[in-house]
Amino acid sequence: MRTLVVTHVYQQAKPYLTELFASIAAQTDQNFDCVAFNYGLDAPLTQFGFVGTEVANEHNLGIPDARDWALRYALEQGYELAIFIDADDVMAADRVARTKAAYSDEYGFYYTGLNLLSNRQRDFFEGQQPSQVTSVDALMAHNFVGLSHFALNVKAAAAVIEAMTCPLDVVAYDWFLTSALLLNGLKGKRVDSTTYYRIYEQNTAGFTNSLTPEKLKRTVEVKAIHYRVMAEYCRAHGFSAMLTAYADRRHHYQGLLAQLEAETPAQMRQRLTTIHPTNAYWWSAI
Image 1 (tube, helix red, strand yellow):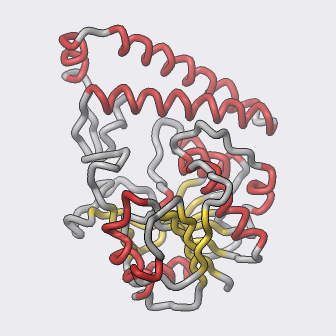
Image 2 (cartoon, rainbow, N blue to C red):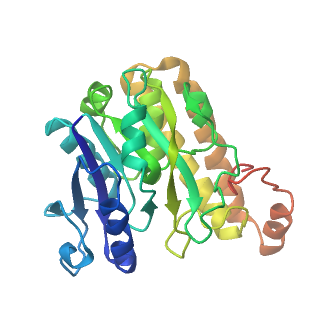
């Protein structure tokens, strides 16, 4: 099976690249190619142990376009399976082997477990990650399939990739991608392997149950953008049944964002006391 491991590297992740590439080199199944899209790192990737194809950002692509480029690259080069990993994360040694073993025509994408790199026994999702995803309804409120622990059945998703246009202002590209796949009837399956997620200042998510005014506003903004993008996707591709659902949520979160911007610090503190995430997603109750 032609398999491609994909990562996107950037300057902020420079301290973590050696660990990333070591985890790729340690895979028990070495029958794969590797491509790294370089956002402008000021050092050669070989310095960090990278073996594969390095692609420079010659056209100054933003994050959504660079992710979209990787999907199309995998498709155009004839790969059957594309396994993604963020530049600041680490994959378990069996991830490639177990993802290949799970590969079938029945599923369009795959996702591993996600544990904290700082505490490898701690499950980021606290046991709430489902074994499979068959409907976009499961991802309506929040996303649990990040690109760093995601793999794509390239052949099954070919038509979706070819027809997909990613808006430049989309923030949660992984949420957009998995939602589009599910809307088109492709299912997702959990792979019995692990990706180790690094929590640090540059992460969007931050610590699992720590909610601040800044995170609250940012999350509401991300959700408003996501629902707008998905409503546009549904309109363009004829998913009329879901168009209304996404448009309604977009309206709700745009209104909520306006309320948050108008609140005083005291009102914001009071609001935070009423939000109680019941699981690992600090954004789940928003």
